[in-house]
Image 1: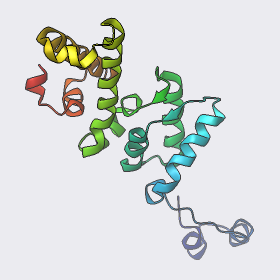
Image 2: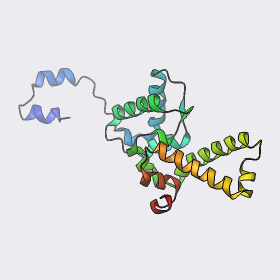
Image 3: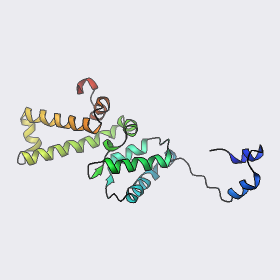
Image 4: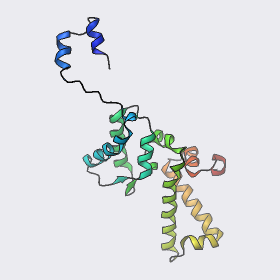
Length: 178
């Protein structure tokens, strides 16, 4: 992370060694400047790990808005962490590290994963209630309350009990969540 040309000029680096190293100079911009590469690189790391899952569209968007101070190494570590810890068939924003979730939480598209979670809860209710699902829950206040509670508990579980992040993801205030 030092300017070798400058070090050669000041006599702090051997000129002959510099010329051996500088035969081919390739400048690679940081990951945050090549957002279009994040998806393919993340999927490559998943493939290398032998994981057949994929990232949701929202998870990919979350990774694209993150600044990646650790560059490609940090992306690799995040992908490996998600591959090891994610429980679902697809890796969603709630499976990403807190720093990436925080960068994404204030964007309007952040609620899409929650809509999928809501649909999954509804699908479970349909199975339990013999196909009634949401239509029945809307008729019965207790069912709607139960579904809301399940959704909140699932988001809290995904955010490791972090109420402020859960409230952001749910689009409600922390006080309302409490």
